[in-house]
Length: 78
Image (cartoon, rainbow, N blue to C red; front, top):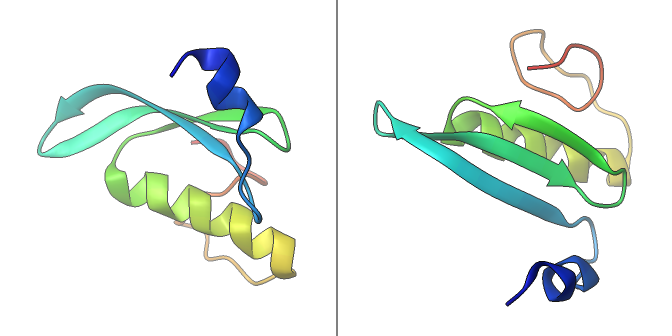
């Protein structure tokens, strides 16, 4: 699938393009792009990747309190 076809596909709650650039310490590092917001962030582990997706999906449902050490699309950048 080429990049144009990929960018046309969208999920119901959110669409993300994940680019895994490295695998180190048994985890992934790379970039994630939230298509609806046209924002890209770097992640340092699979856990951070999942937390970023979770924080984006939660914003579509309503605000929730985030802890300071969790990655987020809002506030501090990873």
